[in-house]
Structure formats: structure tokens, C-alpha cells
Image (cartoon, rainbow, N blue to C red; front, side, top):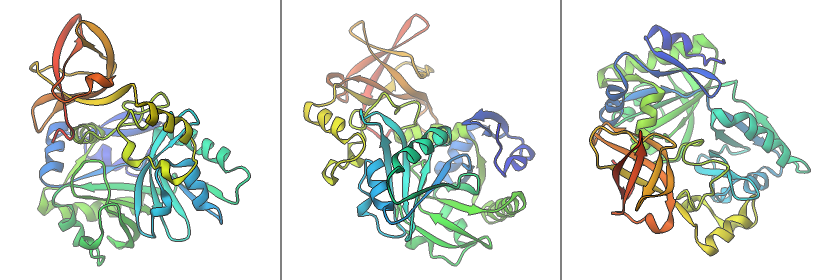
Length: 361
């Protein structure tokens, strides 16, 4: 397994390490997932997400290439702006979701670590015959997500960049903790937060980590593992690749119509997606709250309605904020209306759940 350059820091902090996306990563620290989750919702937390992949797209046809592989409209981006997007196969199935950064003279795509190998192979294949280079810089870049209501206040003590002037999905190139980095106003928790991209070895990473925690200690900063990262994104209803979206789902049934810009012209999967739009998706990704106490709807649990199997759970957990079971899953479009009662099947029993609007929190 690979390790990030923060690995020694995680183990020194007593993190429970697990295999994730080909890396050994911290799933939780001694405080536990609920405490970490609440820290991000109320104060501030730091995630090591250096397992994510970063790819630089350069050359005269860089925009044409990004437009070809991305379902969003990258022509709307200006320098120092980013957008959420996804890549699709010709049949409309999702290869991966990603962030697209306009870096001025090139684009940077940020992809899921677990998908990096297949994503980059696909990009090289799609780049054939185009005046463009696809450069995988994943191993060079370290990435920390600093998330929570106090994140701006704490980080501002470490930089001269006016963080309050960076809009949501905007970023700045600046010095923070004495190091040049991309300071991006993004994150997957639903809270105010920033993602910090920078190069450097273990000693550089240690210095940045120490600076962050010295600045953040007054604000209750905690290290956060992958366990709380998952509960935080689920409370906001954000899709996780491999769970809620995959090669077997298209953007419209996954509720990603808002990033699918068919009007921009032809792109990978556009014909198949347009057909789904015309006919209407036969199933939809829904959010549900479990009505039974202390029941967690796990991934792949069958969803029933009127005694018949109609779909399955894609993500599920207990919401630390609501203290009830929540989840996502696919059901026929007719059952996607909020207020619909469905049943989650587990251990030979059925547990009632109610379809609700997102976000949960």
C-alpha cells in the first residue's frame, strides 16, 4: 500500500489506519468519528486527502480536451475558478466525478484516488490526435482539507491572502504557513472550508501540519479521518464514487443534472444522456431517513415497496447531527417523491424509511 507524506503524523496521533484507494489512511483518531464529525460542524478539522489524484492538462487544445471529457461547461471558467464535474463513458455511465481548476495557462483536474489509474488511462486514450498533454502530478502534490466554521479565521493567521475574498469554488495562489500553495475555497463537508495543494517532502508536510495546529488550537482544531469524512458528506447528500455513482449510473438519475451541460455541444456520453433526458430517467437517487431506531441502512441492502424489491441502498449511516439513520439509494422514479414510505430489508426484517429532500442537515 502507498502512504501519504503525513503517514507518520497520523500514527503518532494514534490514528486507526485502514486500506483505502490503495493507500494506508486514517479512518479515525482516538476521539472517535462522532467527536471528529461534530468538530467540523461546530469548529474546525483537518483531513489528509493526499490520496486524491491531480492531473495537469496543457497545450493549445487543453480547453477542447476538457470539454470533450467533462459533462460541465469548462468554457464558463475563468482563471482562479473551479467547477464540480464528472467524466462519462459513451453510454452515459460515470467514470468519475472531479474538480476542474482553471490555472490560467492550463487546467488541473482533481480526481478520486481509487479511480486515478483508470481515469488517467482514459484521459490518455481521449487525448490521442489532440494537441494536448496529460500530466499526472498526483505523487507530487500533498492535499489537506481544512473545514469548519472557524477555518477562515484560523487560516487567515497563516497567510497574507485575504481569504474572505475567495468566493466559493474560487482559489488563490499564495503563501500559507511560509509555503507557496493553491488555497482553494472548496471541500466535501458542506461547511466553510479550504483545500490546500502544495508540493514538498515529509519535513515540509510536518511543518505545514504543525503550523496549522498551532494556529488552530485556539479554535478547537482536530485531525479528522475518513470515517467522519463519510458521515459529513452523507449529511449533505454528496455523492461518493463507487457507492452512489458508478459506470452503471448516469448523471441525470444520480441528481447531477445541474452539472450536465448538454447545451455546450457534443461531449463523451452526451448522446446517451440526452436520450435519458428526453425519455426521463426510469430511476432516481433518493435520500431517506430511517424511521426505526438504531438501524443503519448499509450499502447494498435491498429497498422494498409494497413487498417488492425496487432498488438498493448506496450509502447509509447514522447522522451524528440528527441522531437518526440516513441514506441514499436508487428507486423507480415513481417512488422518488418526498414523503414516500419505503422499507429497507436486512437480516430477514424490513425497516421503514421515508424519502426526504436533501440536504439532511
